[in-house]
Length: 299
Length: 216
Figure 1 (cartoon, rainbow over the protein chains, first blue to last red):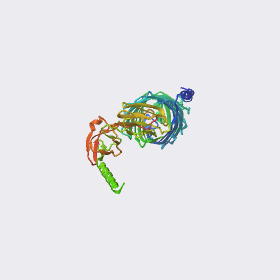
Figure 2: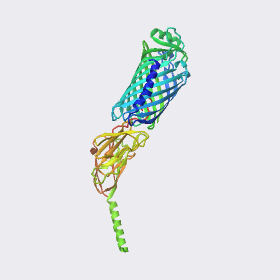
Figure 3: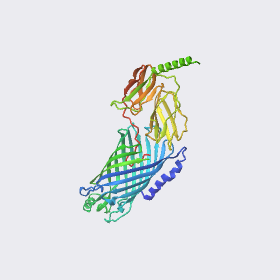
Figure 4: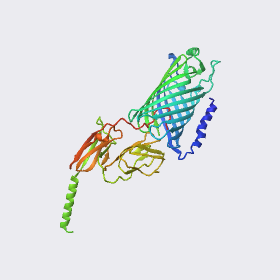
């Protein structure tokens, strides 16, 4: 989808629909959004290489914040608008350092009165990622649909479908017949979440995600030949971060996540999460992981 | 009135006060779970119907997106006001058999107090903020108390006699009557311990998770 069309859809949802549905009786701006996350993560196979001899590990410190407000239309429907900011600093591969700014809009509707009533949520966001390695920078548009409900006092489930379209610049073409727009990517992701309250202070969250579409991998020059031989590479360019090439391919990824939350208060928690990626494109397999500990605050 | 009359009056008053105080006693109750850990928010009460009037209008407040207090015990026929002291709106409701009602999206103190005319448990929630929960327990007696964080509660000034004492807790399984205990009060303070079996039922999660999912 062209970037211009995505921008139109995003502005249509956020700025055109709002005046119409805000006519609902009794609707008004309600709570403020101020979320902060400080995290430290250990990343295995940060370049998501398929080759064991050029996988790289690193760790990073990240700071994320979201500021915005919620608008309540009725007892069952509410909307939020938020500005997202995040920053990542890597230990070894400082060219991976990045800053991201974005705007997020969401509409949430509950289908009635009660704790066990399901909800439907639509989210759309537009964000700009600026990476120190300029070729990795990109703009992204997301559109997500989520449904969920509480099944018991302690257990809830949700399912989410997200479409992402990323637009990066064209960089150095290193193979004439192949595009260099590695970070022009589109993909779909379906995720299923389960949250289980272990005690009043502990929450366990598990999720499984399946992502179909474009993803990128970086490898050394020695392995590029194998990549070009074994699969259909959609784009490739030189990579300043890991000293080789970064390429785009079409494939699928399974993403397994577990998260343990400890409530420090009603507004803050410590979170320990482990995310495992398992990708496949043609005959090559990709594996990676991200183990993160974070402090989260919500106003 | 001469000195003799005053002396008689004082003497009668002294005897009356003495005998009144010796005909009333306190019942100290402790509520624990199966691991002998103290249980807070248990309603301890006498199984009887009181002819006394209902309580004055009580308050269950909404502050920082929480109901305060978590458990309220009232006499049948009492009213409860639900002021919203948050700067955002709430939607309070109950589906409980003893009292079903809804206070649609409101702020401040827009609604009249809600009257609770039937005995039993009433579970309250907010339709917008999932984690907001509270309970009202409606009793027929005027002799009730809610256990503190040490599981303790005192039923004060019980006249001499035999009583059946009951305990209710929001997450207690089974019938309240099944844990009833009988006690005889005769001039001296008594102690009673209840061991109940509260279910592992927690308030919905409120603290922030580390996730990219939006849930506002």
